[in-house]
Length: 193
Image (cartoon, rainbow, N blue to C red; front, side, top):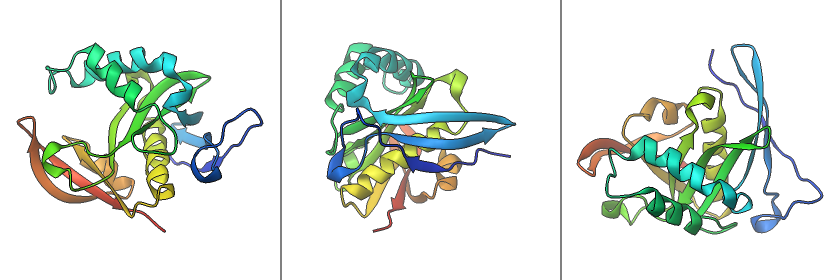
């Protein structure tokens, strides 16, 4: 059985509000995978700037073969540029017991040939030892909720090989295309008003 998630807002006294009065912290209550419970907190990347070098190394390890022209320093700069709240670009991190274990971003455009589509879920990444526990799903849900709060009706993403994962989260295939010479899929998710 796959992960089952239940999310609620978890405002705390010392927390800065995000856009339109919504708290910056979400809690996933009871992600269950093979009889283990995981509680993951999702916070803005802007609250965890110290994690950016580690996230950049993970991102580089995952996607260097596809984007060899980008070094770790380039990825650090990209993530630093996404460390905002309540605006695009923005980023979110997943924390497990206070340790950053994942990342997802909301960006204006992720593929040059499709800049007319906006915004995009991008850079979804979970540390390998924490995968298949619902953390990626929680990051995707929080990021798409941010798009909804920012009054977007749709959000897009590009994936090379995770179409079934995103389909389970409510995404639909928009078109198949190539990016940096490799075939993949652009997906779309319509957001509730």
